[in-house]
Image 1 (cartoon, rainbow, N blue to C red):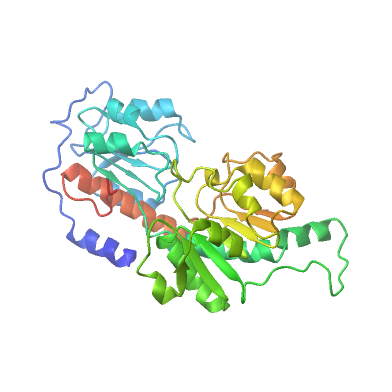
Image 2 (image 1 turned 90 degrees about the horizontal axis):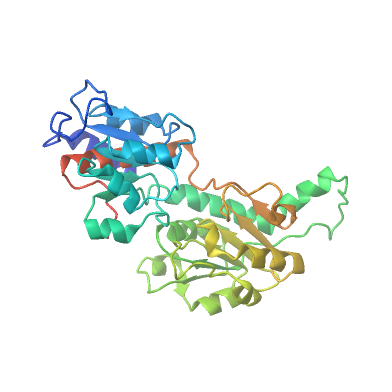
Length: 355
């Protein structure tokens, strides 16, 4: 769906009412630019070219000189540009908008999660803000299924056994947990949660549960049942976190909630690391309170190599790879670019954040 929307947007996009650099408040000393087109800052030099190329068709594109970029440099450049493609999870807040001043017209993140953005500040200022949801749902859902299998079937622990010359074999060695006929609970049944549920149709799960603030109309077709979160934790063989990080969901998985899970249960997190009290999770994995965990996200990120979580054989850890496919990142960059272009032009964004 998103690919067709991007294509349609590219065909129909026209440049109207975009402020030229001649009319924008700047001085040649701080912004030496002979191109009378708007200037867009892309905060990461590794941003996919498909997005950057879209910007270059209408704008001059600049990057921070450092990589990874420092906040100081990004803030300095924010006052010299008409738009920003914000790539990464550095705090995006009123400080950035203040530095941007009256010249800065639009910002788009290249992400679906917005926990690093001061949304109230953007809402208060009615500042055009875009983001890139939906397009990454399938890639993240694939990652969730991969982690379910890897953690439930003890892939990491098996690899450690080989490395330690402990490949014992035998009919009772390294037994894992089935997905077939299991109860899978998904906390957060938005786009990603539903994409996970669609993939599970082929695994013949016994029961599919979800928890959230309200019933989702899509759930019936997917065979999913809304239950209170405590019931989901108590009944599920696999618990998958696909909910945004907010004040209400911070450390929603903690010593108390982990104790409600089955000792045979597998926890999978493809959302945000701070949904989980990591110290409590480490303790639960060591004590056998739960069977295993598969984590694409953790706290902090990057996770130090000597973190205790990395020492556990029943923890499958990958470095926030949920949306890390070539196609997905290309699509995210294109959507973010179109958001910025539209915002500078004073037109509705392709994917505006819903305040």
